[in-house]
Length: 141
Image (cartoon, rainbow, N blue to C red; front, side, top):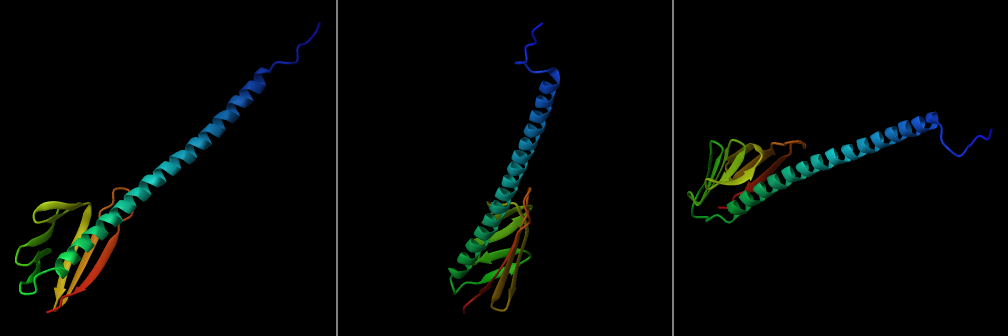
């Protein structure tokens, strides 16, 4: 009787399938981790970008304000040039002249002490990290 030794045994096939399953599971795990990390970093970057844009815009409006008119900061509201531009936080949305300006804001704290305005804005992250930015503006008179 001649034995044909060119085929695979059942044990060899089971071992190959098990090894392929382990390799595929590890590959999927690495891809899944990369995807989650990418999304988290994207959200963090978006949060930082929104906070930086809000601080930049408010600072620009304050610096371009008419020196003959007043800047009033009270109860978390920034009122520039007697109502020309008004910033306030409503829920998690920063409003500019009662229109949606920036979403995802957790905290908006404007303070004015003599000629110094301090703005503190904190983002409200979905998945990324919370981001806080503080800016000080000295008003010239």
